[in-house]
Amino acid sequence: MSHKQHFLLSAKARTLSVRQVFELTEAQAFETFKEVRWGTGNVTCPCCGSVSKHYFIRVRRQWRCRDCNHTFSVTSGTIFAFHKLSLKVYLAAIAIYTNAVKGISALQLGRDLGVQYKTAFVLAHKIRESLMEQRDEAQLSGEVQIDGAYVNGHIRPRNKKADRIDRRLAIHQRASKRCVLVYRQKALPAALQAAINDNEGKDEPIVSGANKTITFVVKAENQADIVSLTDRVVKRGSIVCADENSAYDPLHARYDTRRVNHQIEYAADDGTTNNLAESYFARFRRMQLGQMHKFGNLYLDNYANEAAYREDTRRWSNGKIFTDILTKCMRTRTHHDWCGYWQGNKRQSERLAA
Image (cartoon, rainbow, N blue to C red; front, side):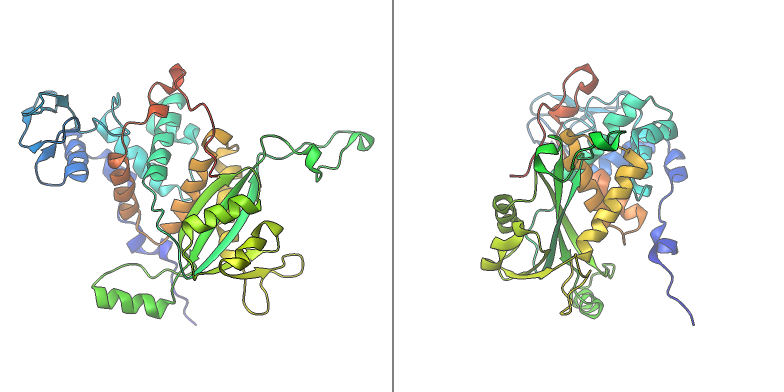
């Protein structure tokens, strides 16, 4: 009996290699950035928005605007503004980041690129910030599965049994404990996806399981946040699947809500499950424990969104993912939190959803 080959083992999944990126010349890397940002047409001034054949300073690879006289480069006004490394290194960083399906630590990225840890840390976070700012927050529909998972709440038990506390009680919980809340939209049946592709002339990959994931960070699963966020990201008339946590009780009045009791089963007799949400948390935990080891609350939302992005693009070729990430970076404006980070210019407060 023959078995269908997994997508990641197929040639379609491998359309780009890090070796190809490092073989580029700096001029080719420059042209790649330019094409992704502005296409093959005229260049746009990031200062005044003028689209024209601006004066090109060939030696410095910069332009001077014909209208406002502003001098700018291919990365001006983007997340990579004021860059000090060569453009090829930034392309290589995105390629390495793309291929790390469970995420990549700053230490490993720094070793691969030959840069110090501080440089790799900021570079990886700039990519995550771009994924966060450019994520698609269009409402989910059809069947949507919701669940929450807690991070940064572990309390190490005392050595002596007599000194140990009941870590389940609220009074003993750590103040840094946070909940990552995930919404996952179930994909249409494969036959229907194929029919849509044929009708619209598309060549989109056929995806089983979930096809869109949106994450939020809250202090805990609670009814107020659940209602607010669900109304924000889930269309009325959708089917919502959740577990028996009382935080999801108000959704019965707003959606066709179905529940599964995980104390007795993974899936209800009628097929109700939130295994798609659990699948997301499987990747999220492996990224947390196997790669990063620790998620700080300041940037927990970016880490959660990175895992969601990797889930949603799991059936894309690595070349397509690379181009998509680079495009998102070019569309993201220079970010205040990542300019002069190691000089003290850091985010002051965490980004909670509600």
